[in-house]
Length: 135
Image (cartoon, rainbow, N blue to C red):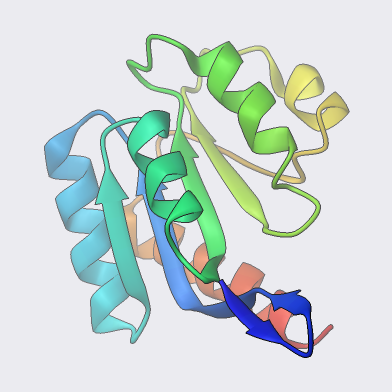
């Protein structure tokens, strides 16, 4: 965290954090984002993401959280609610997941259900990032 005039300055940078259990999904999504000029950190669980966030003086432009195979999805989403006011969070979920209303009540605006191609997901991420940089 950088200090300027006694104020903590947390800067956003053109980056994404991907939280997903499936290593192939993380790798493919990360590769596509990098191709689009978006730095991407891919981690398996929320603990790793929070550790990275706590050690940086900058925030990513977006966090992508895949609920698939996450043992502590409910706890993770609760933790993410603390960040959602400052960072857009995209929830990627199963087509069978019926918790959309719960996610929305927690403040998540970006919820995508499978099936979706990696290319379409990256396009959606770019739209979200573009919207945050125009505010």
